[in-house]
Image 1 (spheres, rainbow, N blue to C red):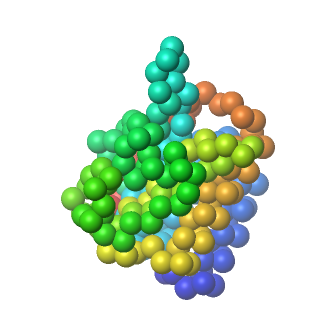
Image 2 (tube, protein in one colour; image 1 turned 135 degrees about the vertical axis):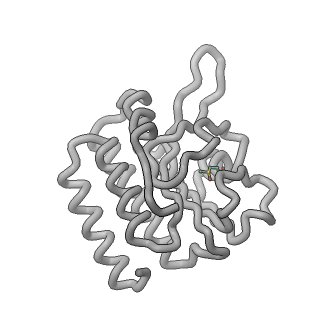
Length: 182
Ligand code: SME
C-alpha cells in the first residue's frame, strides 16, 4: 500500500500508538513495525540514537529499535555514512541509488535506496529514522512526507517522556527486534 489515503490511515494509527505507548522503546518499536509492515517497499526500518561521548570521545549514533535483518552497523560515527551525514547536518537525506553515493555504508546487498530523517527534541538532533529499500528510488515525495512526519512524532514523544532515558534501554530494544520480511 502507498496511496495517500493509506498513508493518512497509517499516520492516524501512529498517533494512537503514541497515546497508548508507555515508554520510548515501546513507541519506537511500534513505529518501526508499522512502517515496515504497511509500506511494502520499506525493507529495513530502524532508529539510530545519539550517544554522547564521554571523556573526550566523540558522539556516536547507536542502533535502536529496528525491524529487518541485523545490520553490521550498530554504531556509526557522525562523520560516516548517510546516517552520520543526516545527523550532523540535521537534514533529511534521500539516496535513490546507494551505489552512486560514496558515503553509503552497506547494510544488505539487497538495499538499493535509502532515506534518513533526523529526529529533533527541544531543537537538537537526538537521533534519526533510517529506512532501506530493495527498490531503486523507493522514496518519493509522499514517502518523505510520511517519514518526516514519523520522525517528528517520535521527537515530540521523546520530549514528552523527558530528555533523558538511558541509552541502554534503547539499545536493548535493538537486541529484541526481528523480522520476517527483509
Ligand atoms: N546505510 C547506512 C548505514 C545503516 S544501515 O543501512 C542499517 C549509512 O550509510 O549510514
